[in-house]
Image (cartoon, rainbow over all chains, first blue to last red; front, top):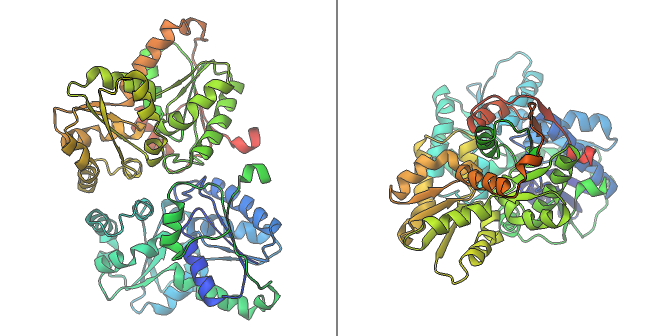
Amino acid sequence: MIGIFDSGIGGLRVVKEVFEKLPLYKVIYFGDLARSPYGTKSPKTVIRFSRQIAHFLVQKGAQVIIIACNTASAHAAEVLKKEFSIPIFEVITPAVKKAIQKTKNQKVGLIGTWSTIESQAYQKSFKRFDPEGKIQLFAQACPLFVPLVEENFIHRPETKKIARYYLRALKHQGIDTLILGCTHYSLLKKVIQNVMGKKVELIDSTEVVDDILAEMAQKNLLSQLNKGFGHQFYFSDVPRNLEVLSQRFLGQKLSHLKQIDLDEVL
Amino acid sequence: MIGIFDSGIGGLRVVKEVFEKLPLYKVIYFGDLARSPYGTKSPKTVIRFSRQIAHFLVQKGAQVIIIACNTASAHAAEVLKKEFSIPIFEVITPAVKKAIQKTKNQKVGLIGTWSTIESQAYQKSFKRFDPEGKIQLFAQACPLFVPLVEENFIHRPETKKIARYYLRALKHQGIDTLILGCTHYSLLKKVIQNVMGKKVELIDSTEVVDDILAEMAQKNLLSQLNKGFGHQFYFSDVPRNLEVLSQRFLGQKLSHLKQIDLDEVL
């Protein structure tokens, strides 16, 4: 089974892509809604939560894990890769590789949560894949984007105003490529594109899944995974708006939804 | 010691009031920043978290507990009152009593998180203190107010626009009293007052503390509490902006700050 986890429902965008690209494989998802969002929390806490979730997914039979959450990818990917024997994938590396491919003027923007931006994880990844430092990276935290998406303010004028405010400096820098470093932001793609102009290429988590799956295929991992039906969706909390939100992110109803308290399991 | 807890830093408004009114008493505070906010979470989860925190505060020597968080008050106050032998105070009852005293046209508004509004806790409290149902209560969830305050968007025009959007219906109803049913909202008092007009009286958590302390005095609880210096501030996470935020809410620097993982303690 392919284990996928996120701080909440944002990772369902990644699940959606996996469903489309690998319809025969089973997915086990964990959304940490009891403790979401992660984007405002410290590295130590994000690592602790991610470790708990990875243990849970492995217990439940995950054979690979995709960390769909950017903040968890930023803080916990290296730790989990060391501590777990199964392959761990994260969403930062493929986004950085794609940005390096796509930029023409060598000016790339990055937006994400506070915790992601301050982790310097993207910055470090750029240093790895662009060791000569040809590319300039401009980072901007956009903390209100997550609650705006969750409160369905996607099409409201206030959101456009806030987007203009956040993106002003990036626009001024003349970037031609912008990494949406948070799964929630892909729902604001139109607003962001509108503010940044048509010439700026947006890279979001949806595209990144392709590369993760290609890497899985390349490493011969897919042949080792169990096929079959019966996806499983676990959440640490089931709040009032889970159904509406999951529909918004996944594009379909959640089946086999279960609530689980990680404190009690582990 | 007076135990005070909140989902995060909002309850520091209550601590501030206690410091001013009862400068000789020791306070022990717990802010659940690793799992905040509570306002988007289910009743079951909010009760579970509140119970853990109350156990922790009692272990540390709390002789009374004030639940500073409206969402926790709404879902967990009754449960905690049954399960714990020490006196438990919450912020809803005094706000309701005050609103009943203050309204002249018998039209009261309530704003809060989704979880607080949907709990019907305020509505039930009104039924108790206004059994004849003379007062009409109009409730409105304002979920974006919490992140707007935490991101320091207090004075930005977007916040005023969002406030106008949320408060439109309440204004239309002609309420003369508005309960700010979330500790964060007291930082938006000016914006809210501005949108609602001068004639609408706002009731916020700060005022409510007076009544809780008066009730404590009346029940002879204050004489039984240990006096002395050495307040203690516990948080389940210490994120980057804790210092700035606590300054904003408490009006002073936090002393004796400790991070604690509740999972490990309990």
